[in-house]
Length: 406
Ligand code: MRU
Image (cartoon, rainbow, N blue to C red; front, side, top):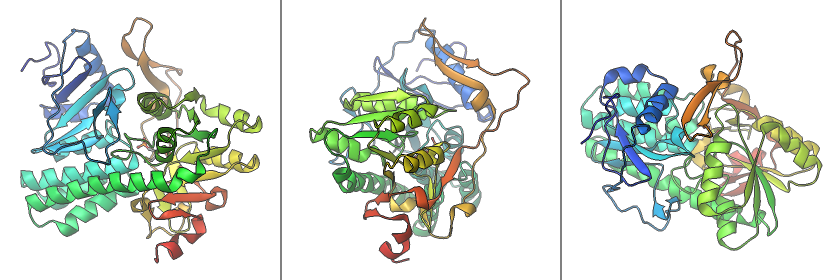
């Protein structure tokens, strides 16, 4: 197996021309930020290794619910192969497609924290696989649970998945089986969300979405874009306004990439352009995902969602939230109780991208001495939300308890 001449902690696996798989092999990598990780990858790519991927998961990936296709090949955002968790390396997208092999629960926790793998449901599935790894490693399970739980404080699915593995598994084999069941359930629920939300997408609909709640964010199919994919596959003429979603640009980098794979017509817009298009009558509805839904229907989602919901209300545009029921936190009575993750200010100071010379680089866009605030999520009050699309149907935010009999 060849090693990078300058980055010995990255190991290159046999690959296809467009895909790469790496794994961590030294503990000091944990101390690096995701940007440094990417910088290593980018530098590594400069050595022009040609690669080819052999995707040989422990179980077949071409089930009926599979949707994510990269150049015609089915993938999930995360899966388990033996003792390894394999993830799509999201910070490389849209410029490169790479897989990352995580060898133990600590590497898996690190990948969640640094957002190599992200998106509410995908975080849940990855966390479940991380707990299965902890079982296989024979380490202290309570400590492993806490290590993984602390990675992303807002995402309700993280705790939901960890608690399930903890409650239902009494052996490593059962833990792996439970984690697989959780990932499969996300795929099934997302497909139901697609079917339930389909009637909202008419031919000619122009939809605005925020962040990335698609294939990459919910194992497969996604939440907010799921009805859009289905409508498009059914031949309905759809168009999507994709918010760029500063500071990490999940819309510009990931949602647009997913739509391109599926052929969905779309335009990326600056985060502050949504109101302009709404005012001009060019947005028919908004659909976003959720990271945590309080029992009263208040929704925590990617920072900037609240602004779009208020603007949609002002302009008389329906505003929908799509999420699996596992994202509802019944113990949280209202949005005021949702913990909001504050991330490193460097995510605001720096952006990453491809230069005109096709080099992947990270550059600072703010003065060196300026400080930045970086809340990762905001809470949209239930009064701005027209409906919540779950696998159980579309419901008004205030109906959640009644509909789920809680
Ligand atoms: O911080 P991220 O990228 O993990 O946050 C993801 C989101 O906020 C998405 O918008 C989303 O709606 C939830 S993912 C199904």
